[in-house]
Each structure stands twice: as C-alpha cells, then as structure tokens.
Image 1: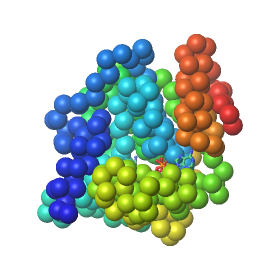
Image 2: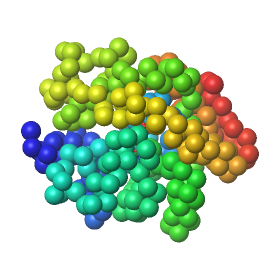
Image 3: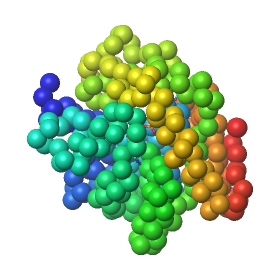
Image 4: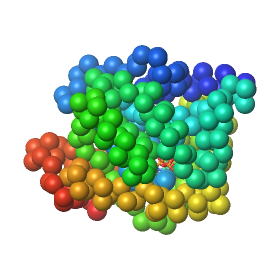
Length: 272
Ligand code: AP5
C-alpha cells in the first residue's frame, strides 16, 4: 500500500487526532456537545503502561481532544523520504532507537497545535511532556494562553507487567489499531478486526529498543512526577487490571478532585 494511502486511512480512523496530522492550520474536528466539564490533562507513565489505551477511552468519556506526540511521529514514518522534513527524518531515527526526540522538535510540533489547548471538551496530552524542559515549556505555553492544567494522571504498573504489555503489543500497519497477543487478541491471528490490515510489532517494541526506552524513562520522564507533585497536580492511578477497571479508577479520581480540589504537594492515590 502506498504511504499516502496509509496516511489517509490513519487520518480517517483517528477522529480527533486527524487535525494535527493534516497540518498546523487545519481546524480541529472534535465535537463535544455535552461536555459537563472540559478537563485539561496530562497522561504520564512508563512506555507500555497503557496510556494510549486509556486516552482513547477517556476521549470517549470526556469529549477531550487526544494529542499524542508518539502518534504524530509514527504517522510521519508513513511518509516517503521526500515528503518528510529533514528535522522529522532525524526525529524518526531517535524514535527507532528508543531515544527521546530532541525537545526543540517536539516543542515546535506542540506549538503547531496550540489551538487544541482550547478545544471545547478540553485536552489529553499523551506522551508530552517527557522531560523537565518540556514540562517547563508547557507551563509557559499555558500561561501565555491564559490556561492551566487540571490534573496530571500518572499510571503506575510493576515493571514486569509493563514489559509483558510491550512484548505482546501488535499494531495494525494500516489503521494503527492496537492489540495484545493475549490481553486483546484480534479475531483472526495477525489481521486487524477493523480494517483487515496486517498486524505488526512496533519497531521500538523490540527488546533492544525497549531496554533503551525504559532507561530513558527512568532518567528523563520519571522526575516529572515530583515536578507535578510540587504543583499539586499529580494523581496516581494503578494501571493493574482490565482497561475498564482502570478507566473507572481514573474517572473516580477526577470526580474526587473536582469535589475536593487539588491537594498541594500531596499525591492523591487511586487503587495503588
Ligand atoms: P509514545 O508513542 O508516546 O510511546 P510510549 O510512551 O513509549 O508509550 P507507548 O505507546 O509505548 O505505550 P502506552 O503507554 O500508550 O501503552 P498502550 O496503550 O499502547 O512514544 C514513542 C516514541 O516517540 C518515544 O520513544 C520517543 O522516541 C518519541 N516521542 C514521543 N513523544 C515524545 C516527546 N514528548 N519527547 C521526545 N520524544 C518523544 O498499551 C500497551 C499494550 O498493552 C497494548 O498491547 C495494549 O493492548 C495493552 N494493554 C493496555 N492496557 C491493558 C490492560 N489494562 N491490560 C492488559 N493489556 C493492556
């Protein structure tokens, strides 16, 4: 299948993310008519903990706009060399190894979608920020826009379960739907339920890249829990159990925060 066809299919299946994928000037298509409260959230947690899965479910529940920096890089991979900017080609090389893409490239991309920070249903930042420098830049960007985060959800899971989730993940090459060989198997082995495309293992889910990603997470991203704890924004949620159990815990944590307000310098813990 040609790269432009893959990209088109991806954009058609990923409702709320499509605007970003079509370029900075493209208007966001998220419609959230009955939103009781627009949540402005960041999702934190180790690679493979289930952030993307929960983000999809939270988007349906909250009507928020799901912004995933990892998705944008993976989509750029579908483009041919000639269609990619030189900066994007460099970014993809970092990603393939399991390293973080340089902060300047990521921040430039996020700035392109600054309008989505004002989406009617709020927003879910998935995979951003990932370093203290990115978190500082996000705080500055939000201040500039006269906005503030409501909470930072930190999904926690023992490392052996995280590794098992990454090792068994399979992704549709065409529509990017996510499966797990045992936890969420497709009806027909190796074939996507939604579009019939082939299921593949992500390049950065191979053991050598997973090792690098875990080290990078511990060094660069784990310190963000202290950063957001000091701001009174951190809400830790256990990522153990089924996806609906985790969603239930997350919604309960958000509702409790809504009722009781933030607890400055203390972690509120749900099911950990
Ligand atoms: P990104 O795409 O953000 O990857 P990640 O953070 O490593 O997260 P993953 O997508 O691997 O996992 P997830 O937590 O979303 O888990 P999922 O829901 O899929 O980033 C990729 C790369 O891009 C980075 O390494 C970096 O190079 C670059 N990048 C991106 N953002 C960047 C930034 N801001 N700065 C610099 N570089 C950046 O679930 C995993 C598996 O578990 C699936 O198979 C799923 O079906 C299964 N699963 C989920 N929930 C459950 C459950 N409850 N029970 C059983 N199985 C489950």
